Amino acid sequence: MNKEIIKKLDFKKGDGLIPVVVQDFTSKDLLMLAYVNKAALKKTLETGYAHYWSRSRKKLWMKGESSGNTQKIKKILTDCDYDTIVYLVIQKGPACHTKKSTCFHNIVSEN
Image (cartoon, rainbow, N blue to C red):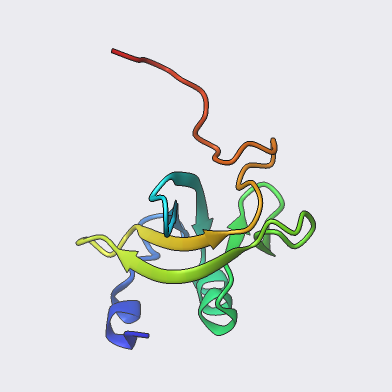
């Protein structure tokens, strides 16, 4: 864990939240987008499993806590501005609450 980079994370831009792009470690498929606050990121780093902040329920949650579809963290990256995170995960079961493998399954445009 690189504590210097963690200190640089900019939670101020998003009212205490940072978006997290979640990607499958093996296939590189985009799985979902969620948000973390400092507590969710800390819990993720402590446990090795993805934890997020629910904007609708206003609470910390672990991915898979009720479904069993957990996300084991393999690597965490941040962008150059330190205001977006990528979780590279081993996904157990589908990532989407609709039971699809990824939340990104609705085609908007195709050329």
